[in-house]
Length: 238
Ligand SMILES: [Mg+2]
Figure 1 (cartoon, rainbow, N blue to C red):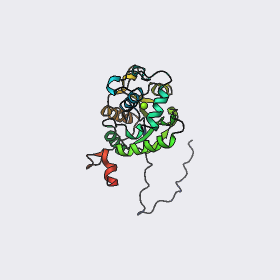
Figure 2: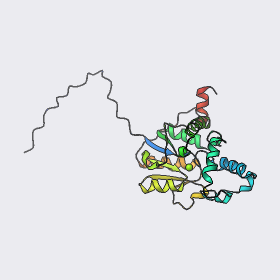
Figure 3: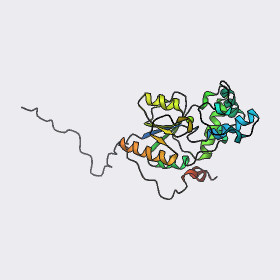
Figure 4: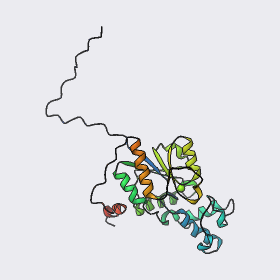
């Protein structure tokens, strides 16, 4: 015989009570790398290396490898050049944004994606104030939205639902922990398996697909924002 079911003793809500809100769905968190993904590190660093070596930037050719050896950057020299790039040439303040980054990230953010910037830019010792200040200033001027920002090298520890990165070591470390990683296409990461995005339009497609597969409902963008990358400028009257 089945147990008798006790009567529901919770009082009925009064007829004019507001409806109980549904719990907010967990946002889909996208971890976004900066150098080589949102900003053109290669172009900025090319100018620095050319100045340090006393040559014209155009003579350095295309970047093919992660450590810039084809530009004559000797092993052990990268750290010195990178330090000069950050602290003297201020490339974190001046590098060109990559096309589409701001617009796509605004659209994804409007659709409900939580944008988490993740960068290893504090690898330069004794220059953290410049690196952090230049980075957040650059993000504002580039019109890139983000809800939080992590300055750290151990990227698997930030618990995003998916990542977009160009660094082979980062992609491999994240995938080793079963993370979804979109490779942002660059000459030095072509040996890695996909998913791969050749530009931000493809990032948008891939992220939308991952969020849908995760069951995260995405919202359409509000009408009237046809220039989302400059929304912060409009808001601040710039
Ligand atoms: Mg990078």
